[in-house]
Image (cartoon, rainbow, N blue to C red):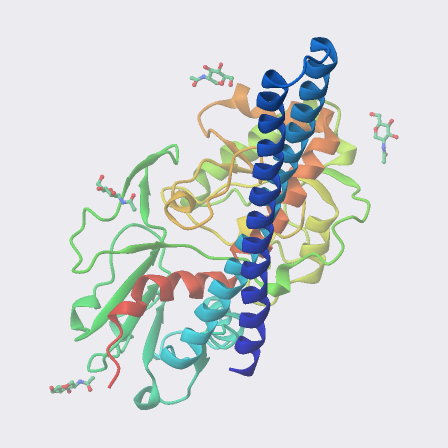
Length: 412
Ligand SMILES: *[C@@H]1O[C@H](CO)[C@@H](O)[C@H](O)[C@H]1NC(C)=O
Ligand SMILES: *[C@@H]1O[C@H](CO)[C@@H](O)[C@H](O)[C@H]1NC(C)=O
Ligand SMILES: *[C@@H]1O[C@H](CO)[C@@H](O)[C@H](O)[C@H]1NC(C)=O
Ligand SMILES: *[C@@H]1O[C@H](CO)[C@@H](O)[C@H](O)[C@H]1NC(C)=O
C-alpha cells in the first residue's frame, strides 16, 4: 500500500507536468502566431515596408514555428512513451497484487499409482523441477491435503496402475508412447485435464498422419511433450567443439526403423565428404542420458557442432531432442507436429533444423550448408539452446498445464 501511494504521487506529478507543458506550448505558440499574424495585418495597413524584408521575416518566423511544432511533437511523443512505461509498471504491479490475494499457491500431490519407479525421468520432470519449484504450486505429501492431483503415468504396466479414482481435480499426465489414450481414464471421477505425450500417429516413414483427438475423450486432450531438464544444461556453450557431426541414434529394433535410415544417410554423407575423423556415430558413454544423466554422454554432445537426431518410428517425442538442444549444438531433427500445438513452437532455421525423412538430397544439402557455414550453425545452436531455457523447461510445462486447467479447479 505504502509503495503504491509512493508511485501515484509521481504519476500525478507527471500528468500535471504534461498538462502544464502542453498548455504552455499551446499558449506560447498561439501568442506567437497572433503576434506574427497581427504584425502582417498591421503591416498591410500601416506604412509601406520593404516587401522582401517583410516576407523574409515571416518566413523566418514560420520556420521557428515549424521547429517549435516539431519539438512539441517530439516532446509529446516522448511524454507518451514515458506514460506507457508507467502504465506498464502499474498494470504488472496490480496484476501481481491480485495474484497475491486471489490466487493462492496450489498444493499439488503427485499421485503414486504404484508402477512408476523411483527416480524415473518423468517423476524428476514433474516433482523435482516442475511443481515443487513453480511459483504457482507447491508439493504436498498427502492427496487429502492437495488442491490438485497430478497422476503421472508411463503405462508400462497399466493393469497394475491404481488411479486416483475418487479424488477431485485430477490431472492425468500420460507419458506413454503412441496415439492411444489411457485405458483407465474413465475411472477418474473428476479429471480436469488430460495431457498426452506422443499425441500423433505417423506413417511408415515417420511422416505425420493425424493427431489423437479423433479418439473421443471428454474434455479433450492437451498435446504434451517432454522438456528440458536442468541436469542436461551445458554450462559452457562457448567452449571449443571438436566433433563436427554427431549422431548417437541407435538402429536396432522396429522403433528405430527410420532412425536407422537417417544414420545411414549421415554415415554416407560423412564418408563422401571425408569427415570420418571429425565425426562420431553411435554410442558414447551409456548412449543416452535417461535418469542418471551420464556425464560422458552429455559432454560428448557438448563437444559436437552438429547433432543429427530423429524421433522414434511411428510416434513423436523423445528425450534425445532435449538432450541435443541443451548441448548448444546445431540440432537436426525430423519434422514434428506437437511443438506447433504448444506455446513457443520451434522455428526451422532459427532454433533448429527440421528435415524430411523421405528426402535424402534435402538432408544432404542441409548438412552440406551447415558444415560450410559453421558460424551460422553455431548461432542457430545457441538460439535453440536459449529458446529451450526460456520456454521449454519443466516449469514451463507446469505453466502450460495450469494455464489450461486452472479455471476448472474446484476448491472448497
Ligand atoms: C471410490 O468410492 C467408491 C464409493 O463411492 C468406492 O466403492 C470405491 O472403492 C472407491 N475407490 C477407491 C479406489 O477408493
Ligand atoms: C487434431 O486433429 C483434428 C482432426 O483432424 C483437428 O480438428 C484438431 O484441431 C487437431 N488438434 C490439434 C491440437 O491440432
Ligand atoms: C582428418 O583428416 C584430414 C584429411 O582427410 C586431415 O587433414 C586432418 O588432419 C585429420 N584430422 C584429425 C584430427 O585427424
Ligand atoms: C527433396 O528436396 C529437394 C531440395 O530441397 C527438392 O527440390 C525436392 O523437390 C524434394 N523431393 C521430394 C520428393 O520432395
